[in-house]
Length: 490
Image (cartoon, rainbow, N blue to C red; front, side):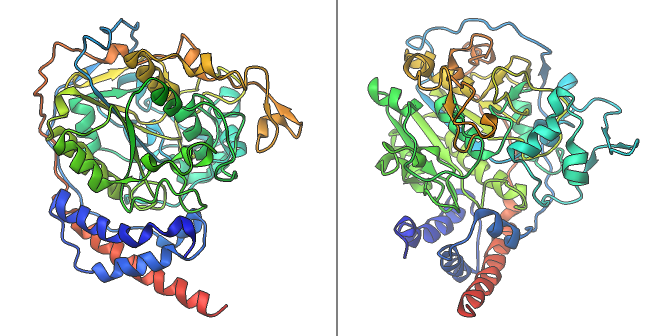
């Protein structure tokens, strides 16, 4: 077994226990998960795995309505210093490849942040293509490389989605598809003006979420342990702020290989073997109940729950419901905030042109929710945010210096390798950490610390979602057998 797969032996049982303990779900084909374990040990890319996995079955669910307050634009106001506000625990969760308009463009209270009436994309032949509701909760993947994302962006015209990725890029979901996420928007704060960091794919954006910069990297093609610059965890350790990474689903998201790699720390020399990166979902639940939740927690997704196409998006919603409700039902809830975002837009349409602060972005808008008893309720924020905004909040809350003040490696240039912005040159444009930019918000305006700390809104339960878990087992078993048969035939 490859070294990076050694932990898989226990992951399947933990996933089975997760579905039992956190939701009451019953999966009758546990043996199929053992086939999944053997399948995961077969070397292949995440994209090929997801393509073979295909789509999953799901069920429609209803939810109760909440109260709303839409803000078109806000001036940031000061929040009390961290020693006087009640937040002690900051949690960060990042799912995959969804744009704001794809998920919340039809949110009834999104106002001007939602899809404009009559919005369309040109078809390249003089015609018009309008957004449409996806008929099912899974779809094929769209291209979201640096090159194709820039074609969609078209220097700010935002008119290249259909001509680059076809009709698939024009689909959207609504409340009937992701009721739990819409209920979170009803009950907490939805960010209508939050952009990913880079006009490119997953890894550059996840690097920016942890370090404030992509370091000039614009592709997903780098090796584990190859990077060496300041990340937010360097500051946390330097100032004795506790942190952990908790792996969702099978818990493989921190493994540095071509199948996972959702945790960008695995690409850093200093951090790739750090034990704090490898806590599991069971540890998260135990820490919540025992009062051992660290000051900063990173919830690391993985391929079965990340919402990356062609995965059924409700599988990810199911996983996020479990971790969010566990937080809300724990003693830590009254002193916590969870930032829930997506790494990049995945090639799906969005109508708002991202401001450009350097040669790498901002990228397209992504869905982002602020979940806390102190987050303004039913509020849609218009403040400009991007991934470094989460870093700014952490830094301000704990009195840390900015990463921009610590990392000057990219102030004047970036390495040319894996850097499309370098255009084949040895060096590319600068990319200093963006947590030093004053026009990027730090979420101060989304909190109201006068709100009741015991706030527990009524949220829908995806109680019947054991059906999807059952389908995962069956599909994994089928694909696993096909993979083993193919290997045997080599």
